[in-house]
Image 1: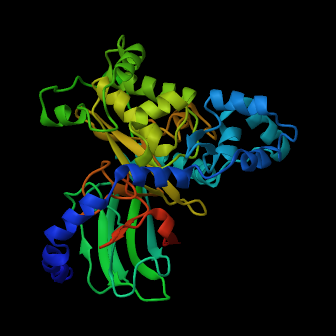
Image 2: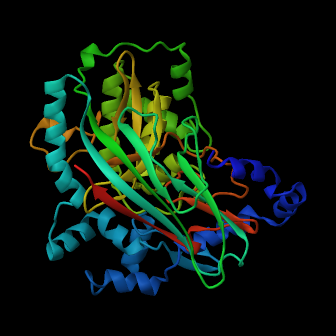
Image 3: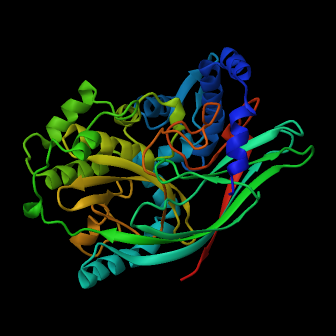
Length: 443
C-alpha cells in the first residue's frame, strides 16, 4: 500500500534525544522575530518612493497621520521603524483620499474574480431555482501543484518532508476527487477526519539542485446558494453536540474577549432571528473593514482582535472575525479555506460556513462581501449564503494537526494553504521555497 513504508519508518525517523535537543535549541521568540523581519522588510524611504508615484509631495506629517490611523502599517524592530512589505499598496486600499487619488490616475477596473463571478452568480441562482437543490453549476479542473525548495537549503543526502494541499473529499460542494500523478512513488493522503487535507511526500536533497515535490489531481467544484427566508428559520437545539461545538471558543483566534462580547451585543442582542443576526454581522464587517494584504498569521496573537484594532484584514482574517462574532452571538460557525480557482485569477482564500437548524451548513464569504457587479438585490447579497463554483476547499478548520505529524512548528500555524516543509534540522520557512499552481479547465 502506498505510504506504508513511510508510516513504519516515521516511528524511527527522529529519536527522542533528537527531539529533546531540538526543543532545547528552538526559540519561538527568535523564530517570531525572523518572521516579523520578513514581513516588515521596508524602510520609510522605500515606502515613500512608492507613495510618490501618486502623491509626489508626500510629507512626514502625512506619514505619521497614516500610521496613527492604522492605514500605513509599521513597527519597531531592532531599534528601527520597519514597514510592512505591502504597506504602500495597502495605503491606497485603506485610506479613502489616497484611494481616490489612485483611481483618478489609473481608473477602476473590476477584478478578474468579479468579472468571472458576474456570470457565475446568475448561473448558480437560476440553477438553484430550476433544480430545487442548493449545490449546482459544477466546474471540473485538473490541477498540478508544485512546491520547490531552494537549492542547497537542505544539506545533500538529508530527507526533506513535504505536505501539499489536496482537495477535500468530505464536502458535498467538492466531488469526484482523483489523484493522477505524484512526483514521488510513495505518498500519504490524510484521511477526511483531519481538518487540513494534505498529501505527504519525502525525498533526499541533492547538492546543487532544488528539491521539487508535485501532485496532479482532478476534482469537480460546485457553486452553492441558499435563498433563505428569515421567517422560515427555526430556533436552535442548543443542547445538541453540533451547537455546543460550533458556538464555543477556539484558542487562540476565536476567543470571546470583552471587546468581542460587547460588539456582538451591540450588533445582535435585540434580534432573535438567527439568520437576521448573520446578515447584520456580515453587513457590518463589510461596511467597516476593507480587504488589505495581510502579514503572516503566525505573527498575530488574536486575529479578530487584530482586525478590530487595525480596521482591515484579508479574506481569512475577516472570516475569522465573522466566525467569532457569530459564535459569541449563538450562531454555529466554522472557518474554511483553500483557493479561489477562477480562470486567470487563482489565489489563496478563506471563507466561512454558518449552520441553520433543518437547513444545514451554509457558505458565507465575508471578504467578497456585497457583490459590486450585482444586477439585483439578491445578487448583491449572494455571498451571504452562497459561494461561486471556482473553489478548492482544503481546510475545514484552522490550526489543527497535520498528518503525518510535523516535528517542528509550521510556517502557517493558523491556516494551511501554501504547503509545509521541514527536515531534521528544523522547519523550512516560506522564504526557503516557492509554490505554483497550473490549472486546466476541463468543462
